[in-house]
Length: 82
Image (cartoon, rainbow, N blue to C red; front, side):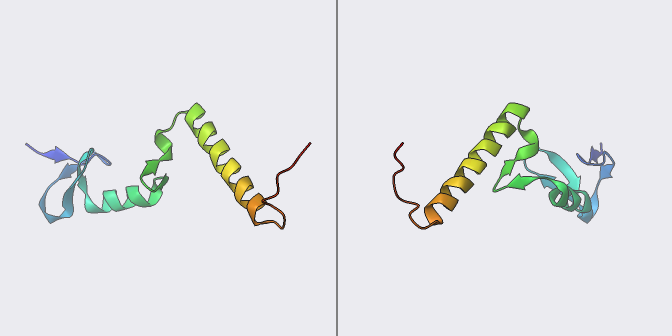
């Protein structure tokens, strides 16, 4: 019985193989290539997000950037009255 790489589907055997948690067996080179190409940030795999979740994440990041920019401007802590 041979185990196939979760990335390239070819048999994995010998010292060139490893087990990727939650995925399965893989070649070391395939795993390294996967890590280089995947789009993650601090364990968040953004490729796993659906379109609505990705839009929500984008809105949160933009809101955080705007808030930090506002706080760093002179008078940025002032409360704005309308």
